[in-house]
Length: 496
Ligand code: HEM
Image 1 (cartoon, protein in one colour):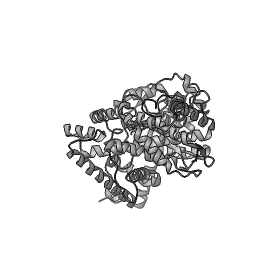
Image 2 (spheres, rainbow, N blue to C red):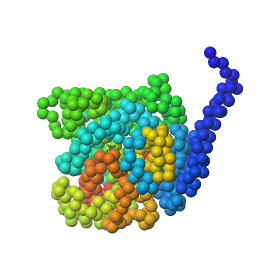
Image 3 (cartoon, protein in one colour):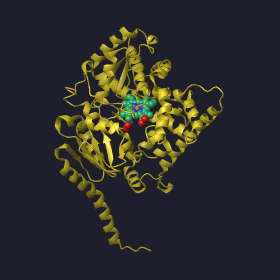
């Protein structure tokens, strides 16, 4: 067969390494020559943006510092290009370009190399579906996510808030994101299945599911060399078993166990005479009319909603708590407003939940400053085209940064000042402030998220004083943009 000397092998390895290091650099320099000052380059050999992010945390305690400062420090920049082991990514930040991309979603598809074992977890779910599959699923789920349908969930959310906050230890640093995450997860599960599931492996079904999802997703951080090299070699194909680590095999077994439980529940529902009016029934009706859809689709759709709904909403609530603790004057203002509008928690209902502009402004300002999703999911270009002056080649990678505009000094004066009152007069470009994205692939869960945040916030402020724990908080990106140390809040019960 092949016979190579040691020297030849060494030379080949050096050649491959040089290719991995030099190719993106040369490509980037050519682009820089073409686009000039309008383009900003972030290049680090091989790992690229990973190293850039580490530096941002080290220097500024904030992984998104660069994005927040770009409108001040480099106002002429329209596109950022960075490298990773997967190649170059072109990041758009200007509202006009974001608009063009979001209005022509058919020219892109969500990048599938991003999540480990995505095809076993949630690639059959709405966020990642494309074309006719997406249209069908979006149609089925949309009805269940309209405010008119969701309003029936308010009593459940209120009950869960009362239950979960009753268990909180006072005056101790607590994990507020975990507490709210449990509430949000239970609401999604009840809305989908109209039931809770038995504990597994000594923890609640939901904690097990979230732990498995987060552990799988974080493998890229835990074992970056193994995961990156394997993705580079096998691309989107399923990884052969011999490339899986022991931890990955165990995680996949736990995932399968969860999926088996969900499958039984779906099969039982299919046989039921009087089905409850929930997401699953809506989905089963569609499965029966459409042979292309399977139980696996329903399972992955649920896992996807857990994945897309819990961390985003609970971290936005975490950001609201952070803002309340560092701006105590807003606790007082909002508490007075809540007293005026609702008097007691029992009086909060679907008729009055959206009544207060002050609460809406406060949440908007938290989303502006600490949006849980600063970047939309990476997209791959399906065919050659131009966005503004920028040529996008088929198979190249594109990202939209939605955070940079939130700190644009011309649109939000003094962007580092927390000022909910700015939303009284804001008349903003619909593509400038898009925490839930916009267009036909906007966030389907936005009404649910805002309804939950309002219920949580009103309960919290009626019952507790919110205090900050610890100093020098580091803002990082886990799955979403968040504070590194989970226990950054303590609560003190208010005297009645
Ligand atoms: C504060 C909370 C939330 C934020 C900031 C948020 C943000 C977003 C964003 C930015 C997108 C667009 C992603 C992209 O195109 O790359 C999105 C899509 C999506 N979100 Fe949310 N989300 C939140 C809560 C929720 C909740 C509670 C659910 C469901 C229970 C949910 C389900 C989805 C789904 C299914 C999509 C994909 C829609 C489609 O492609 O048709 N999200 N979300």
